Image 1 (cartoon, rainbow, N blue to C red):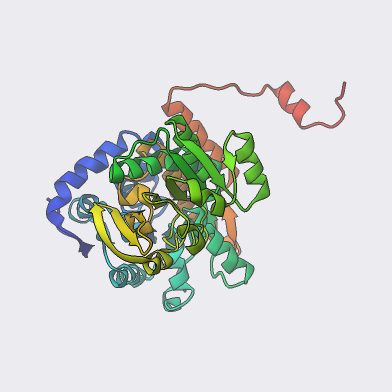
Image 2: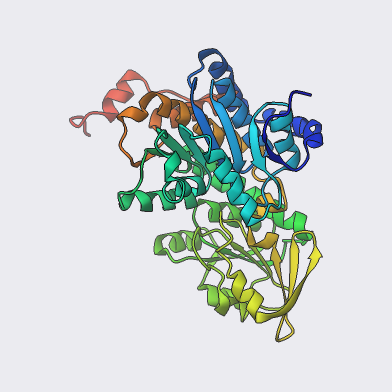
Length: 422
């Protein structure tokens, strides 16, 4: 075993199992592996301190190893108190020499202490999932922001926060919205969240989805993914939305669409994926039928009004791991899954490695792009450059053994001209 690196993890003796898990994930991450091989030779991140606030999973570990092989000094903390895989965190510290601050189930004080610990390194680059580190660097830890040349953001919720910061002209450095890359949200959000959310609910409850009325709050890419997979498993899917275009799309995809107040009266399982506040609120909790399961697959646990759930109940108890049973004052029993946090990471293992392969390839190549160009960029939120996005798509297709056509010069000329008609 390598010399133990500084950090704060549950138990370094778990490292051996963590290494197995990291290597297993790597089997399904061929795009990131190709990038890692190139990074090892070219060292495009040489001399950079990168602070990552991400879900500490086996897939994330492979990204951290890629950044390290690219020459960066890497520090990581958890972006969610319940998403850490403790054996992976142990392996990062004890086997791979990456300073890691992450313990599954850490309390709020520990969560922020860990973030402050990585910020203390005075990073050159940030890599966020939810924008918590960026928020600290723009508030109580502004002292550590002076060396930051750029950052990346992994998730919808974080991008929303950062765009708000930029609109208020308060953003201090350029950030690449990795979430908005086509090879991220089309695949990670739809296929990854679609599968892993239901995986988390099934692992937590062992409930049969077929025949259940499942209410999906939000029909963005994550909601689309969960809705389609729930339908495929025989569920009767209801969608709630505030965006008329998305609601129309859900209706034309064959789902029932109605206000949450109506859906709350008939739903068996509720899944929030809005990125917003109180998608399931007090008024909805008051009319839910006894036995309803409530889960969240959005980044923060604010999508469910947990405070109202507490106030409306006479008490709660653990029904099984990751399932809290609330006895309501009128005798109903409602079940909150995973403390209202990301159910796919709380009760399961998060997205499959094959889809995180593309998401983390975006992270790695965006870090390289920032290392080369940050000095030319304004303090704004940028999309992943198209050539990076398309290269990741090509690499993934190659890894899958899929070939596609290319345009001939004649076809390219036709598509770029205005004077060729009928």
